Length: 145
Image (cartoon, rainbow, N blue to C red; front, side):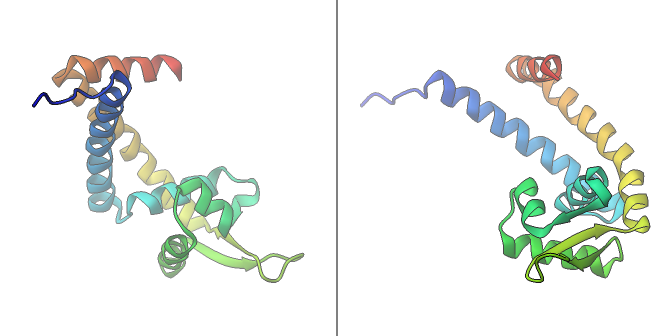
């Protein structure tokens, strides 16, 4: 019986998944070891740092992180416990809540950002050097940015 080969798109997608898993693993390990932050926590701080008034509704944060409401609630609980964020009720909708970045959270994010950027570049370079197909993907992504 002949095995069907994946389509070109499926093959490309699989390469992207390998690249993604490799990079995410490197980022998660380094951020935790050097800054005590999980990858989702780092990204949440980044989204808050970029947001107007350094605050986002919980639903907005969940959407940006690609997490469900329960997961983002636990994540924000950890950030609140570390005093990187605090919860603020929406003035016009008492059922809604904002997550607000503190000065300590902004400082931790900005300290970690240099590590994140360097680790990201190194992980992409590592995969690109090891495999021409990944090199093409990385080059295309970088030229599109």
